Length: 207
Ligand SMILES: [Zn+2]
Image (cartoon, rainbow, N blue to C red; front, side, top):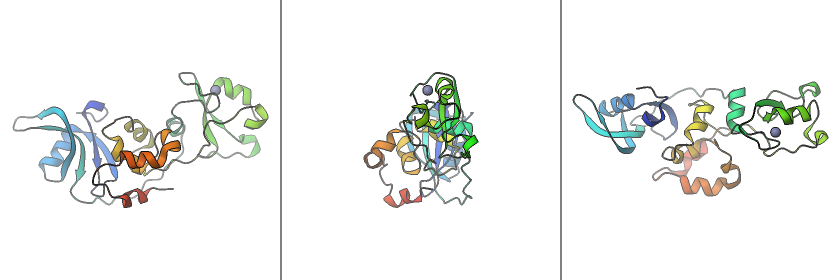
């Protein structure tokens, strides 16, 4: 089963609860049957094979700790769009043609980095041209920054995975994939923290 089909995708957590991967239901069931993982969340469906009928897992936790080198979180067009929720950071428009804007223009030695790139509609981009936001009479909705995030799952997938209400509590301590956290960070972390997840896990956030 392809992991890309949301209804059949399963979130895989490391033994220490860090989100490691998004896999297929078939692969997740194999991990459970081999004694390598336990289901933390299931839904009302039943996974059926020739010899097996078990509740469909949606989140599994490995029964052992997997050491994996931490990948580098690279800035990219896709990841900036994902961070900014495909929303122009000057006018708030979505569903329009979007592009990347260097807040401090490249011509003024503005860097291509998380802190200087934002998602921008073509209209605002034309208004701004090679000026600073203040010079162009524009104001940023959010100050751009590098996401707090552990990049075992790609950032675009992580942001998409945050939309899954069952997965969200397991992901929130490990990354800020959606803007609501910027304003309600502390409350959200407390409210959404899954049972049994100790606060020390939240200290693993990369900066
Ligand atoms: Zn705009």
